Image 1 (cartoon, rainbow, N blue to C red):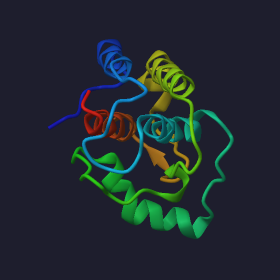
Image 2: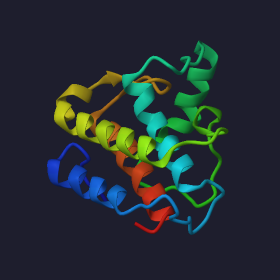
Image 3: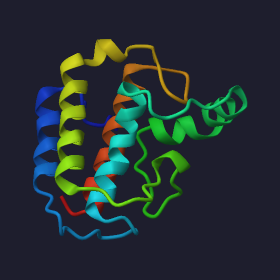
Length: 152
């Protein structure tokens, strides 16, 4: 089962519409994050692509991540509820809903505008080179998981 293509304008607009249905007081159906923390958490994936604010893993850690975590992140199998979160994705400070919301929408729009070809065999932050399908699955699956968590 192929996941929806986040590089497709209609798919990215549908995801953005779901994000726009969130409110500062939207409650999760599971998990410990509030909605602002969730948005910040989702932004980390894009920060690792577009910003230079997260240190890259060393050779040993990258080998571990590629061998054991890459498939979980880039395949089509949905994430389980209450799964383990990587340290870089843990939001430990308070975040502003509107700021994180706008950032996430801008990242999704930028990704869609750059298009699939931009990501073809592009080096990822921690998993090495990824195919277009792997990039798509990583982007879409993570967003869908957390938007579903918050009922949108």
